Length: 205
Picture 1 (cartoon, one colour):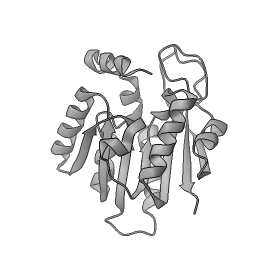
Picture 2 (cartoon, rainbow, N blue to C red):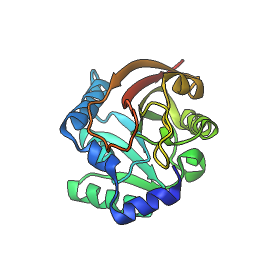
Picture 3 (spheres, rainbow, N blue to C red):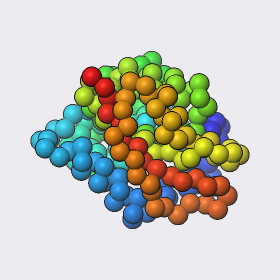
Picture 4 (cartoon, helix red, strand yellow):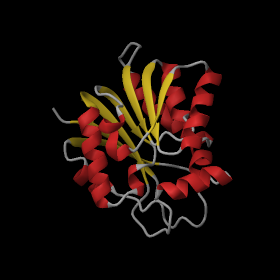
């Protein structure tokens, strides 16, 4: 999906991905993934990176749990809303306007123990996905976890093209998928057979 599409979508308020993330079952599922990463650890948990953070819902939740969070997104309106959300919640999050295919150039830093992709990489083509994977690997710590939300592959016009387990394993060759879980979420009818899923990956030593 192009930056132009997202700019238009945020301008007119057509952001079904934001509404979907707020649905009870989805929010509970994401919180459960976070709970798992925090098990047997004491806060502060370390650095977390939220790719395509949008209006910052997950970034703010992670910060409220004790993570040191950086959120990155290309859309100025989304970043402004994310900063306002963090201020209302009374938490500190570094929100950066930048491209997830150029994380190092954006200056996000390194050593992230948790990287969250709540639906960004699955909007890219194969070549772009590989660039994202390389950038994530460059900034992630040696013990990092990566959580990816993705639709199944399909032709859906300007909406995400999707990626499956094999696509993820191919792009993120230095990582291992440890868990896969379907998502019970209401999505717009024009999305054909999205089969939304979360994937949990751990970096290989």
